[in-house]
Amino acid sequence: MRQNPFETPLSVLVKASFQKQLLISIPHLLALAITFLIIPFSIIMSLILMLFIFASFIFYFKWHIYKSLKRSLHEVRQDSAKNWLIRTKAGDFKKASLLDSSFASNWLIIVNYIDMDKVRYSAVFTPDSLSVEDFRRLIVRFKLT
Image (cartoon, rainbow, N blue to C red; front, side, top):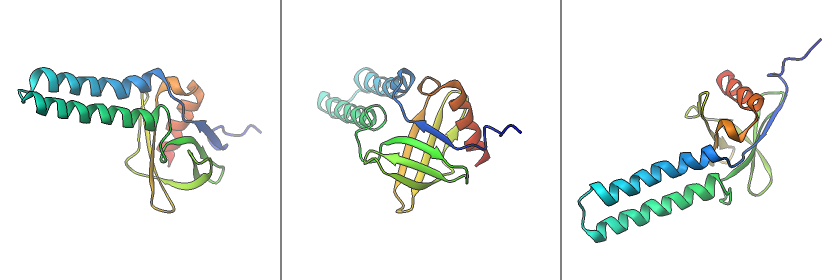
């Protein structure tokens, strides 16, 4: 008898991808353009706002693309008992709960977890960061959870 593929354990690596880079870059570029071109602030105020936007861009790139921050996720697993496990930068797996603020669509998956120590983690998955089958399985897992 063939086992249902959605009942087997799932393990996906959180990878950087071109679509994820665009997802981070485009809003920051738009904010820079609006700050520079449209908002009639003084030059000093515009430079300060641009500095904050650039710092935000660096933060999100380090979090989701380079995965160099403490709360960056490197792997997400769901075992056969439907428990979620996350692997952080430190390399250890932690049991975590999926939060209701997670989002799944055919173009983007944003998952938010909270571990036993009440620390929150987030991961972003785009279709080009996973295989087609893993992306579809991840969407189904979130909708079933």
